[in-house]
Length: 219
Image (cartoon, rainbow, N blue to C red; front, side, top):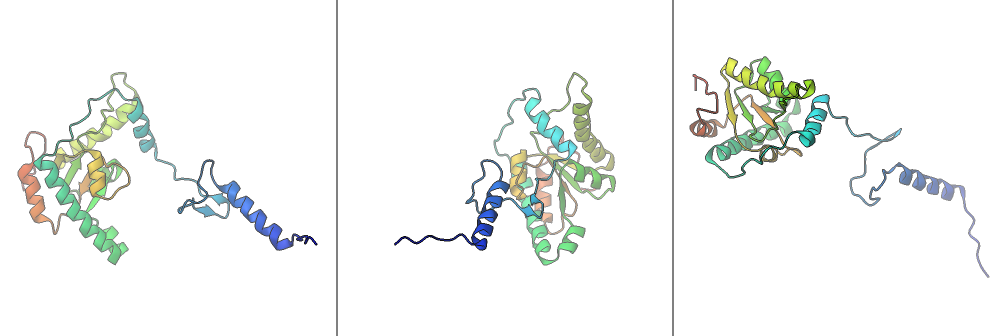
């Protein structure tokens, strides 16, 4: 004798829930992914929209004129800068786990054109590290968007010169991002507080090229 299973209300509710979960996943998503997209009461949370400057950087990165690949050979200045930034990251990360509010108020460094420019205006930056493989956004066609990005880089250099802030051009973006535990390359880093890493700070100064960096008189 065959047994016919009757579909109950709870079974239909469970099936509907499975179908909704499947429909909410983006096309091509792995249903067994350990990190599914975050969901809100309205559905799948949309990714954060990149800023206009970030969009311009990504766009020009693929459309800019061909630039010879930079050398990846290690040199003493790069290694000294990486060791210095690694120490600052360790101190800042340790304080962040102890007290997030205090860590934010006493940050040792900031990353990115926007943050570095902001802190340069408030004259809180002790040193700026700029990657050696930043794209050349200045174009001969006079495109306003591209020239604005070029002016951002030039503006940081001018502010460093005006305020007598140490400007060091070292490392490629990927290495700067890696040492600071960032998921993406870092083009520029502004050092706010080198406290606790004075010995590594002195080592950076010893390897700075006087022709390519701005060394403060006080140093």
